[in-house]
Amino acid sequence: MSWPEVSLKYVARLEYGDSVPQREEDRQGDVQVYGSNGPYAFNSAANTMAPVIIIGRKGSYGKVNWSAEAVFASDTTFFIDSRTTSSDLRWLYYVLQTLELDKGSDEAAVPGLNRDEAYQRTILLPPSQSQHAIATYLDQHTARLDDLIDAKQQLLALLAEKRQALITHAVTRGLDPAAPLCDSGVPWLGEIPAHWEITEVRRVVEHIEQGWSPQADEVEPAEDEWGVVKLNAVKNGTFDPSKAKTIPSELEVPSALAIKPGDFLVTRANTPELVGDVCHVHSTPPKLILSDLIYRLSIDTSKIDGDFLSYFLQSTIGRIQIESDARGSSASMVKISQNHVMSWLVPIPPLDEQAGMARYLNMQIAKFDALQVAAVATVELLHERRSALIAVAVTGQIDVTEPSCN
Image (cartoon, rainbow, N blue to C red; front, side, top):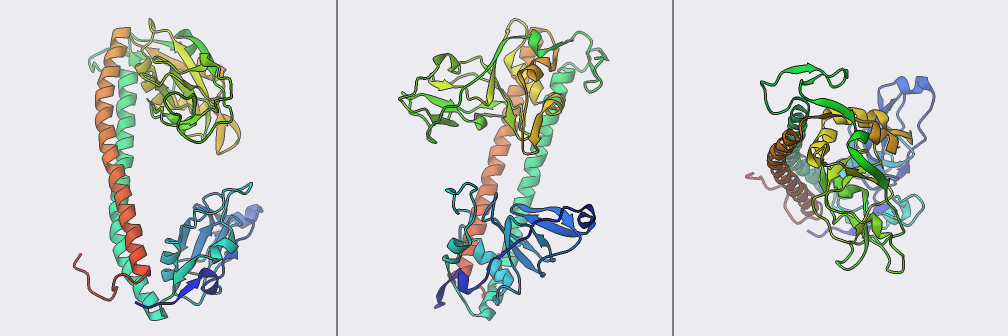
């Protein structure tokens, strides 16, 4: 198909959103407020027409959202409605998803989408009748893919829920259903096996320290180079040494901070949902050090099994303590202190029972993780298929007027 190639600026005007009103009465309405990542609040009045395309300008910049209703577009967004384009809005919504607007400018103090740069992106401009046909075709076909993606996302949520329930039951009730129970004396813990004890982390830990965060290169270190782990090296009870940055060779590295097998790691800063993530290190490269945002606990292995402690702090009961201790001036970044960590309460079964629970959970969690990996891979493939379908449709590589057999 021979469609003219034009710059986006000749197709639509990206209108700036507005500052969200701060008066309480303004926030009592039913108009959704859109930020860069989608709707997040309500307002009494809209500043767009309906329908409308909302594009992230700051934060999750380049993300393209659609609303069939008029909304309040915040000042972290651009928007396009019938006042700022004569093209089919639904067609334009799909076209914008092919422009990689999320690859904006990271060089500014606050990374974001530059409107003038966005205007320079080129698209193929079909006649209005073809625009409508493309939009109708993609609405039908992407809906099927979206249903499949939603189903897999629900499966992932169910797997996470069952994983959490399995861990929590094991580390608070044990593996013997016939074991007598007694009141722990801790309201949020409830009953535990009568032969278990409860103690603070400080009673089973010999030492706690945090690391060092030098200016480092955003590449994984080679085998003979020193590296510093990133925050996401500690996640869901696992340690991923590949999540590391290379320390420049001219810097003197405090080798005492090198991570070793047997170390117990706790993240000390993150979002409220992720702060206090833990892992028991089983293996690691020799030249990898702790970052400033991670605590290392030297545990007393005569009192506690590292894997058992890891599972307890991942449990719902463990997370109650962690999240209640998280402190911060920002809702998106909180911290926990060394004293908080050392004050957490932990149930202490006999050591052989701890080891048995850890082995059992290692086997069961491996099954959950395998299912999760498969589901995530499927979601990624579906997203790729969706993106490819949109790309071929809006560039005229398929005839959207032909009936589909799928």
